[in-house]
Length: 159
Image 1 (cartoon, rainbow, N blue to C red):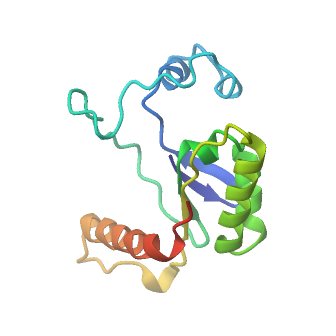
Image 2: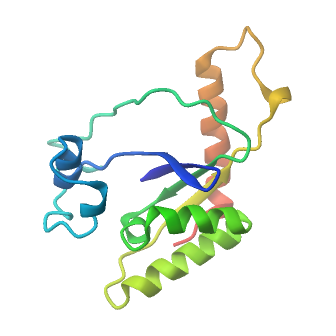
């Protein structure tokens, strides 16, 4: 999952290709029912499935603000921790310390059945002086963001 945190709250997150996400989107279950639903591990699409590859979807645009935090993580993290705990932890300290704390807590809370835990975070540090000039396109802005995420991947990987 990819999360976008702002001011200690989840502003947005990607939706899983799973049975329970379909039920949630249809209004048949609530967010609170996701964690304990009996079909929570039923995946409808996944990376690497050649017969049914995931179809990219795009949500509405969200303007990034200074100090926004992106968190990309595996189910070993998000399945063990609730969104509020992750948001609070990311606000309290540096991202490196927060990632370590989140990974430790996820492993601790799901022991002895802990899943693999992968997580990376990026804090948006842009301000008014970094706004693109009028001749720059949205694609340029997206490319810059993706390059920043790519550059951050190597030093921040935790597994």
